[in-house]
Length: 453
Image 1 (tube, helix red, strand yellow):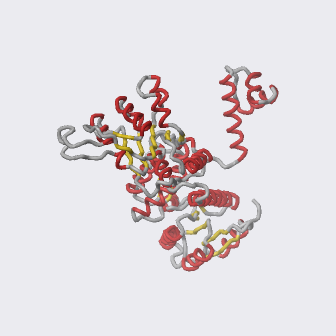
Image 2 (cartoon, rainbow, N blue to C red; image 1 turned 135 degrees about the vertical axis):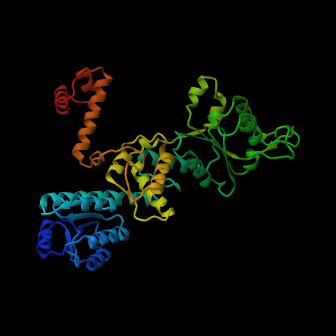
Image 3 (cartoon, helix red, strand yellow; image 1 turned 45 degrees about the vertical axis):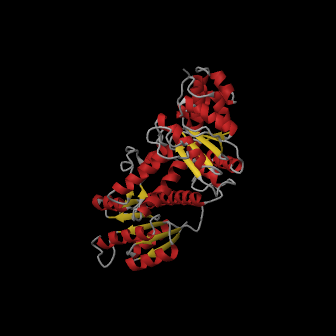
């Protein structure tokens, strides 16, 4: 490990162990504290990312109440700090209690320098990763749209497209799975447009019964139908000079599609029961999670309407396609929701982080936010585990590796396997697809234990 200015706070009252621990971590700036008050003062002054804490502190050297109290104070003052508890040999009860309170890990005496060094280095690496995620979540340049939190290239490209399209009056079709944030992007298109000071009117075409949707969109005249007691403008008319957002446009019934097409072509409407043409100047944004091309082939969606609403199409990637964003978003949600609920110091356990990264998120960002919110409300302590998120019990070892060799090997193995599957197991053709020689291909097959089918 290269020499850096990494800070490590060692809370230990035994002078001999203080010297030993200082020697163990010669690559760190080691700060020593022998009691509670000194430890808290050093914590405030140096803000160390990692702390080792001996539970047996004065004046109660043979007890642990001072140590546990100090652990709680450290986590309240610096919730992102990784605390490694040092406890007596085989004192499993204290170790388990420490981790439940929020400690990163524990270590039994007598001190094994190599093992403790490994734990401290891992804790520091995790702290650096979390710090980078927090930095990414607040960097406005990475996420140019208000409310959009991302560090993935695919989502940043979507943001750049929105910035380019927003100032125009182009009709935009936003595509994406449920929960990906289609309305959020529609609001960004409106907010960055020249119409931002006018109304943004949204209507969900799937949420309103077919017999009511027409009057909701186009309005109606007094006496047009039973219950029509007065003249009422529709959503299109209400959005005049602003933006109309038609969510789930793929669920719009065919007869209404024809009327919407005429409006988009002529920019005039007629209220239900009326004869007067009313001009409306409005920017239209549509969204759907459905495959409109498939609906067109099934004669469930008009092809001419499709071309009218998709002057520009923007496809939002699913959360599983946004590498690194699931954990980034989860941390942002955890911090925001715990603050809203008046709860402090909440954090994810290692198994929770592994579960978040490995889960497919079929409900995308909406599902992630809902699961984090439920976990914060229902959790009985400030450690959010995979079970609290109802994501199963993934082990900490499943947390994504940061070792470049392991990442390359995993990527190479996946590429070799895909190439073999693509060519029916023919080694020479697979090697050609991968751009490598046959001997290299055979070396990779042996390395990864793969056999041509």
